[in-house]
Image (cartoon, rainbow, N blue to C red; front, top):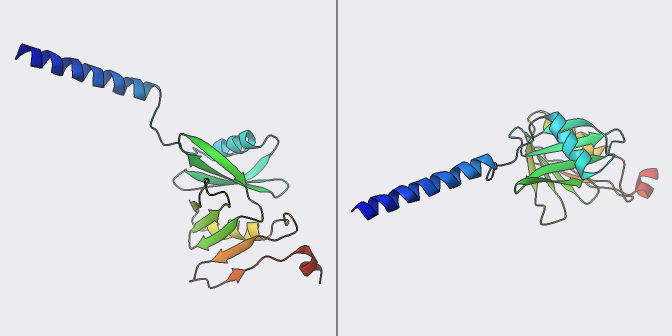
Amino acid sequence: MMGVLVQAGVSLAAVSGIAWLVKKLKLGLEPRIADEAHALRLAEEAEAGFGGVDVARDRAGYSALVRNGERRMMVIRAHGNHFAARAIDSRVTIRLDKNFLILTVPERRFGPVALQLGKQASVWAARMRDLVPSKGRWRRIEADAADSVEVEGESEGERAA
């Protein structure tokens, strides 16, 4: 009987020690973008010299959009215990769904990003539509069925005509 109590006590102490170590090392926490300054730092880490000037942070803090002075944009999202960022270019599919802006990057491992931006979702969708074309193509922006609007990209030659 005494051996069982000793074994239970040692097991409890070991589990408590591991729990303390995990907390001390901040393991297992879901990374969040704390504020606009944090999103700007992450964009600068992803691309040196990006120089972000405007940020739209997801309400939960899992992702953000950052725009720089040259009107280029970058999407940042939580990825595992870290953050991943991708430039928004003509290959990104953008869908507006009420208060959500859903971006699908062609890189499958990055996955789609849903940003809950509230009323700012439509503002950022419009900014993406008005971006300078990348590789001679405009971005494709799809709207939710409730909006029933779809804008297909056109090349620079089609715009000039």
